Length: 323
Image 1 (cartoon, rainbow, N blue to C red):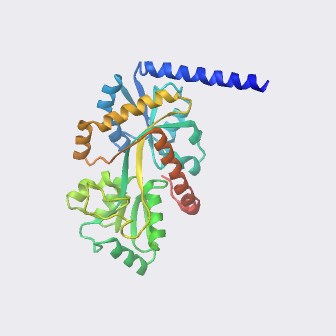
Image 2: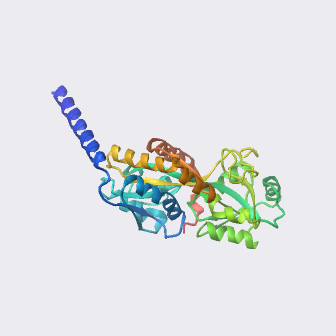
Image 3: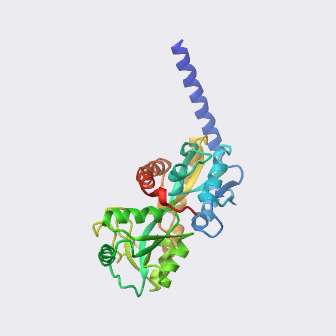
């Protein structure tokens, strides 16, 4: 009996695999809807615009942006989770939202309802101050912060954004306490620093790059393993002795029952785009921090982030202001 059951399971598994391969061979046959959990003009929009023309050419179909802003992308992720897994509904998957949202609030989906497709960009964290700031280095700021516990203010996008997590990692690594000022987004955060309303901002490279290159903001450190080619003179926190990294990643994800061959077909098309000279040239011109990750690598990356963010949220989330 057990032998017959095993044979039946193997037969069903094999038939499902064949069905998936058949679907992938014909994929895509129609436009692909791409859910975006934020308003037009944001980082998700920028990411899609970078790959969309070449990706449409490679896949020989149209990618249709479908905006579902609100609740830290939960509206889009909820719709994705309830969509048919046929490869024709994807979402711009962002971190830290994907791993942490189900921890922060009661969501109608679980992380297991999402299949990671391909990561496209990891926008590294960066610590900036206004050009006239007396703080020339992270050491300068850390020294002043230790002398004035809780007095120096730093801006971040609201919890549970990557900047919010990063500033808590910095406080732990530097053994300092600062006044954390939350904003509705990265733009208001760096603008407050520029205006002198805060001492600085924990932000993302692509958001403040033009202000740094224009001399309006001074970059003190990057939250990366190694220096950014876009700002090679800016040290990393790690090389300064603060052992943490941070950034915001964006890629593509699908409903959980999407056949693996379809996800692979889509991911390979994304890689082909990102390997092309045309894309690389455009990315260099716009300081677009490309970071392709395959479905397997992307899933492992999200799992790793969960082990980092969850303890921080459990420790500091009780006092967080979620906007």
